Amino acid sequence: MSEEISEEIELIAYKYALQNAVRHGGKAAEGPVMSKVLGERQDLRQRAKEVATIVRKVVEKVNSMSLEEQRKGARNQIPRAVGGEEGRRAQGATAPTGR
Image (cartoon, rainbow, N blue to C red; front, side):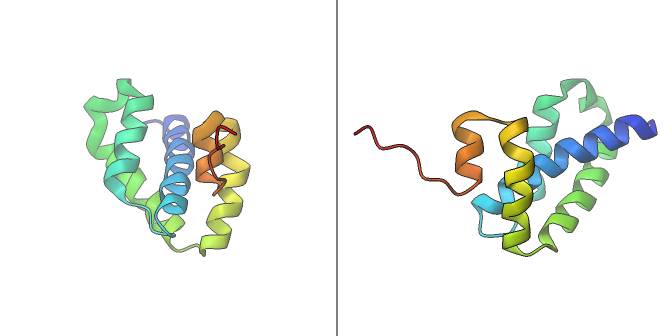
């Protein structure tokens, strides 16, 4: 796998690992992050083992961060990358109430 693709996968995995960690009290899980990465880049499914190695490293890095660092990273990464309601939820914002 080329270094350029590896870096792209790291960025995608980082985005989803932060999102997953913020939603789950600071602990990201590899499985859901892997699913999101392969969902976004279906062309990498044949290289799932290589992608899993990268995802594992990224999840370990995110899990070593404090919850506050994860939230800060999510605020910087997720709204741009994910946007909309999903991005607001990942930041810890409450859903609008239909008042």
